[in-house]
Length: 460
Ligand code: 4AD
Ligand code: MG
Image (tube, rainbow, N blue to C red):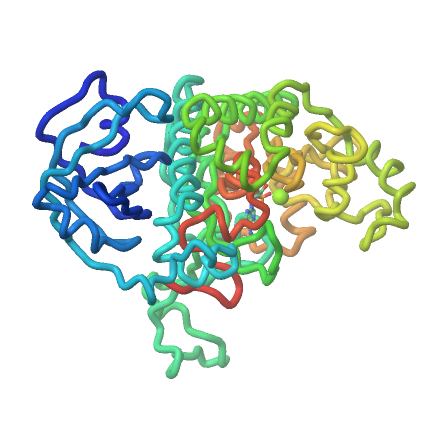
């Protein structure tokens, strides 16, 4: 049985078997006490080996990190203990010993920076195991929210020939021999000889394919990996991330904002309700302000703020910003966090940025200079969601693509969606790791994913 099952048992049991890793061992004259964890929940179970038991000789040799199989009886703890049950061991089998001197997971060596270098072992720590269980719970909450609201889960390709964000920050995918690259007569790389017969990359977003699927299914969402080759070494950027992207035919920008707000609130509540013990670890040891800051999000209506209205608020504070704001400048995290943490003191949905900083697919407003894009900004992180109502008019889309110097050929299928039964539609992308930072209070994105990928780092 797992430790989670054992601790939730309704009565004592004979002849149980539990597997796990030793956390600590404490010896007294008559007993050895072992704290055992198996990852199924935050709590350990206490194993007691009696000096009179044949397993005692083994028990007193166990060091932290050792993997064991324990046979014994599940018995009620004496009253006053935090837990109801403990295990009286009758037999102990060691699967693998653990050299206490060399084992990197030590009580005193727990800095996040150090643990990143042993990311293969950090799932053994309370904090990283809790983080990984919350990731699972959050994934489940996300699927549940969309399923309950009539969105159909779709899978979009990881290998793609189009650059969704048009930012040129893609990882190329090739089977060409890089030491002997085939060239065209003009001297360019001959991608016709590459695996797919053309230049391909890892996707930065499933949105464009998602729009095609929404144009047949109505309401869809994706939940998949995205890859960004942007050279930003910040607390909130990673090169491989998971993104959730709903897309809804017939939705306008206002409905997109409603969806995003309801969605964020629902998944926070769901996770808080379903893994209180793991969240408690973060609220206690990582960020004392975690629970109030999450309540601030679930209990307040998000501010709706246009870029035009945000600008004077930010310009007035230019002396405090590294990047000075003026019309046409995109917000950075310092501006986003000022609006959320200092000015409004609650989440903000910022919309209507100048078309010059918006992506090509964002619908142009009637003023001809701003677009129906939106960013959801939250405390500690800034942007957590980016989305928009999409440009659904063929002529305007083509005009915008030409203005941005985009080739039409790779996007001909995307343009087709505006030729055959175009509809207003809108969607957004939630960065899963940023949502994890929000939920746990962890301040570096490298510590909310099992094996982070950032510029210069792709170990494990
Ligand atoms: O704002 P972004 O770039 O929007 C899109 O990709 C749209 N195509 C989404 C859509 O409308 N379907 O990215 C969406 C979110 C961001 O708000 C952020 O939370 C996250 O994805 N994100 C990253 N998270 C971590 N590291 C990075 N390098 C990220 N880039 C984006
Ligand atoms: Mg964005």
